[in-house]
Image (cartoon, rainbow, N blue to C red; front, side, top):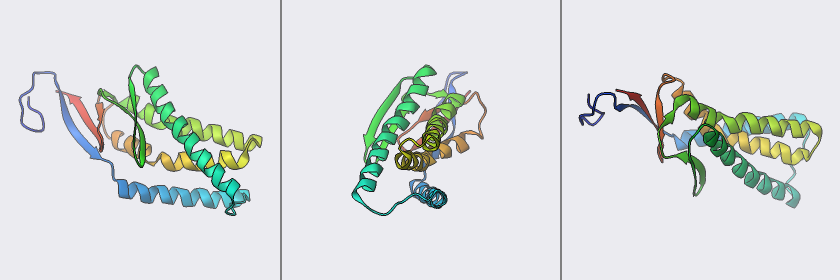
Amino acid sequence: MSDANGISLPAGSPVRVAEYIFPRKKATLYGVGVGVLVGIGNSFLALDFTPRPALVASLVAAIITVLLLHEGLHGAVGLALGHRPVFGVEPPLVFTTFREKIPRTHLIAIALAPLLVLDAAFVFLYYLGVLRLFADLCFAVNTIGAVGDVWIVLKLARHPPTALIQDTKSGVEVWQAG
């Protein structure tokens, strides 16, 4: 058995079967698209987005809050599944990664947790009437920020649950037992 580079591997060693490089430009366009959709939804909620210092302060607070909660939840779910998260900042990115290969099903749970859990919490807070504008901004920021997480899940859905995933700086590698 040999890997993608033709190097001989012992029987049973994992073999890289796919690599996905995150399309930053496309993701930015998708994020803008999601932002437009969220903005259209906000027009139905009749929220006042007239530029003013309080709105700017709320947006900055929402971005910081969501960054911490979003990446923290990735890390917490990974930790709960037995993996050791590594947090990092490489402007303009803030990220959570794992140095070891992890099961595909674990990475899918880790990737989707912030989108599902935080968006549900922000919608709940909005409907409770608690800091409506802030909750709405957090919802928008989190949903737009989850574009990369959804991209990873869509790519990994093609592979069997037994696949192991290695996070890389530019995307993910998919490994299967040889």
